[in-house]
Image: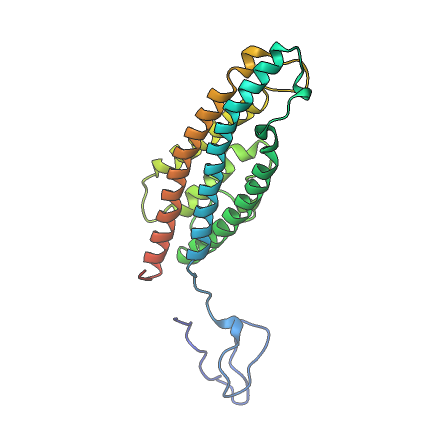
Amino acid sequence: MSYPPYPGPSEHPGEYPSYPTSRQPEIGYPPPAGYYIKEPEPARGLMIASIVFAVLLTCFEIIEAALAWAAQSDYLDAADQGLTGLDVSTPYDFAALPYFALLIAVYVVTCLWLHKVRTNAELIFPGAHHARSKGWVWGSWICPVVSLWFPFQVVRDVARDPREFKSNALIGWWWAFWLTTLLVGQISSRLVGFGEINRDLVSALGTLETINAMLAIVGCALWVTIVRRIGRDQDRLMHITR
């Protein structure tokens, strides 16, 4: 670790040298702790956790797609019997609760990792431009409207090397797949309600959930690649050999 030069003796006898902190050290003691420059720290543990939870969420999307086909059949049979959506109960209907819990876990772990690598990026390249402040690492995913592009900007700026002027198309593709997955998921969740069952809408449930799962798989693969690349680049810049 490198430190700023230790202040030399004062020009006036009996006076302490000045420090960039309010506390003056006693003679013979090292500079106060606040005088040291903070250095970036590896985020390997959080990186692995972020990847694992992203994969788990994708696996759940695949399971949900499989359950959707069985639910589609049950809802169509109920429609033939003149029943309503309220009369039908399937595993697909109950999958929303564990999915939401897993989504919260993914959000927390991912933001912890992003916050760490964002801090590292600021230490490695002081003064480098970031489109959003560090608080948006957490808020960008949950704030309405801005959640459509703020998270992309946060990840893009963390992954960017300010010494280079090229853009990373991989991040753009990942974000496009993520937004499309959200859109398809929202549509499929509204195909079945509690009232009268619409056969035309229900007949698309299995297909849409399958498409959603395929989009999630591609998006997850892109995300894992991005996360690993950011971790590898920061480790290289910190001169850490894995």
